[in-house]
Length: 85
Image 1 (spheres, rainbow, N blue to C red):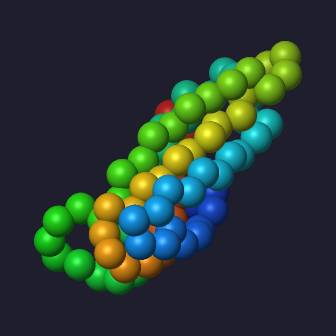
Image 2: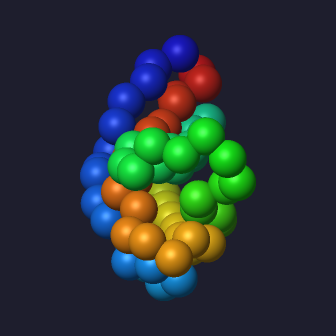
C-alpha cells in the first residue's frame, strides 16, 4: 500500500468545491479520503465528499473530488489517497 496527500485547500462556509487529479494508471486501486485540517472541532461533521472518475486516455483515469462544507465557517481540507496495490 502507498499513502499520500494529493492536495490541500479551503472550502468556504456552506459551499461546494470540486477538484480533479489526472493521469492515474487504471491498474491502481485508489481510495480517496478528505480530512478537515482547520478549524479543529470535536463535534458534528464538517465536510462531505464524493469521488467521480472518467477514463482520461487509454490506461489512465482522472478523478474528480467534490467537497461540501456543511458548517457556517471556512474549513481547510487535505485530500488523501491510498493506492491499494
